[in-house]
Length: 305
Image: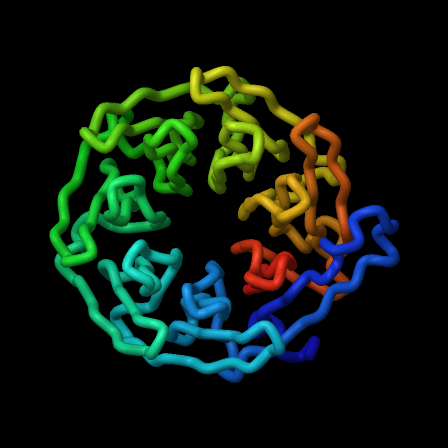
């Protein structure tokens, strides 16, 4: 398994026993058939399986909770990056454009979105998909109609995007060091992150009515209310490069620490809504966890590129 570095989908089984110590947490791993597949993102599908992107293998992967993997090849020019469950029951992903794949494996590509430079994608509150892109926030309907809205800060840095509890789209501005909020009408408000050069990248809607985000360079987890008030919480491990973030069924926020070179092993992190952080070692040498989601089985799934 260690020889197949970069070809693993890893499932964390420790969520059901959160009171145990880090040494008692159980983490299982599954090797992806395609070598050097470089999985980046993972999402729960409407079929009760996990779907993930293979940016190196130019495939979309599907794994059942028992660990059975199926791969769906894409055109070489359509190597995928991010993936999310759509309101139509299909999975939507970014790459060289936008793609849609049904749970039966039927693929549709929308290459006309390629000029926007799509990055991360999420289901919106209006029945469409919204995505971060170069200098804009994009929107694609389930019928494939694309529109875009300008972000005030040029070259803001395409990060994560999520629907907030207020019915707006919230996104991270990696280069601009801001958190953005966009209404479905395209009105944007930006909030500077207090830590200079923090590099906000992942974002999720929290269980407390706020948004939680990762600070890749700042080595912190941030929280922003819908009114724009920001709190930051330092990650105990230095230079951990927190990236992906999701809400667990335990009411805490879970995140990946993507830098394995600090101590040659990475961690999974958990932060309560009160700001208490616990880290759990990933027992795979040089693992680099990125995308993360809560699975249909109530466990935390994450990918290692």
